[in-house]
Amino acid sequence: MRSHALLDELQWRGLLYQATDNVALALDAGPVSGYIGFDPTAPSLHVGSLLQIMLLVHLQQHGHRPVALVGGGTGLIGDPKAAGERPLASIDMVRENAAALERQLSRFLDFDGPAGARMINNADWLVDLRAVEFMRDVGKHFTVNYMLQKESVKSRMDAGISYTEFSYMLLQAYDFLELSRRHDVKLQMGGSDQWGNITAGMELVRRITGAEVHGITSPLITTAAGTKFGKTEAGAVWLDASLTSPYKFYQFWVNVDDRDAGLYLRYFTLRTREAIETLDAAMASRPERREAQYAVARDVTGRVHGAAALAAAEEVSQLLFGGGDPKALSAAALTALSQEIPFFRLVKGDPVDTQDIIDTVSIGDDALFKSKGDARRMIQQGGVYLNGRRLGPEREPLAADDLLAGRYVLVRKGARANVLVEVVAT
Image (cartoon, rainbow, N blue to C red; front, side, top):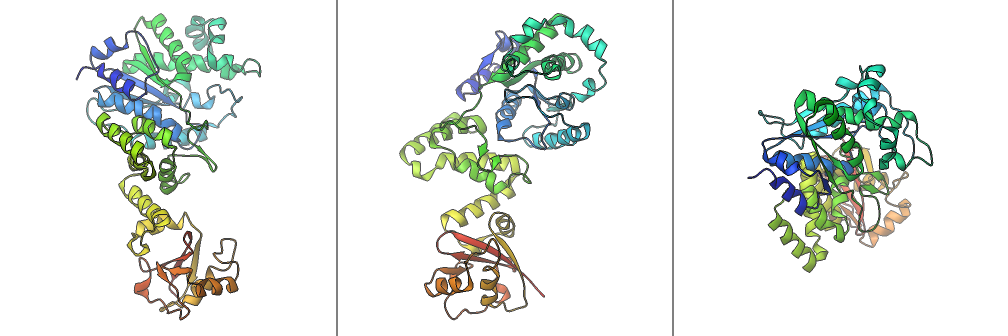
């Protein structure tokens, strides 16, 4: 496979926005090391980072070496944002966040073998960099006029920008220089908003070493509905399971707009062009089945959280939205479910009196019933279910083997309202 097939791949997937003129020749000349920087100012990457991660994945799949640069040094400053000045993070926080990002990136890239991916932290050269040395060796290559033309700076001129953030471009350019010197990196990739920083780095490398290096950018994602990609009513969708559960992560993808589903298949999965076009056709003819959305949800959730977490998320989704049988739930799915719906504990021996179950879920902020009287009326109307079985007026006790995974009772009111009770033996 010719190396510039990478550009063709990115093009048909909609991942190619800008590229330097001779990048195809450089890719053709042999394996190229290419990098993307990731900002460790948060304890996790979010789905907005996935597009950049997938650029590295495609780079590796086409025989090149991906380099994930964790910004342990630049993260102490933060790149300029149109919204305003970032609060400065502490050194310890950036160090902890950088370690978390490294773990997340390792799920996408193969680090084994002579052409395996590399994880590099720019704190290795930035933290001990001397100010006078930096201004003499780097700052003299950039005019203020040149820096003012960059969009990341121009967007902040009216509101004001500190010298700290104004200097970020020089630090990122210096990263490219150091990666070129230390690891023979010839390519930087990123979102289209990073083009100014990428070209600044290319210029610095050319001026100081004379080497020819290149840049590729991807488009910025906006949803068809005009909302910011990766944002929900609950906030950002994170890759860390402790911040966004695998179930919520899976549901984020299942619920994307039909108009976006085809794009996300191209952006975030490794499915072939033929497979994606088949799903496009299915989406056009059977949109109610959401086949494209489920395909994206399975692929991305499995890659980010692993097969076991994906299976549990699918089981929980089937139960809550597809009328699945509670008795078919695995122990892992029940654990996941306990984090997604109201959860109660009941200390009780065997057998378990169903009235105790009903009383337990009728108390507290997450109560399933407004009162014990409301519970009685719902039972009489046949609208209450324990582990999928309608509860009748006789209220038969539950034996240990009636409990899900030997310890849970799923109580359902009507069609959709569910709570989970864990029965703890006395």
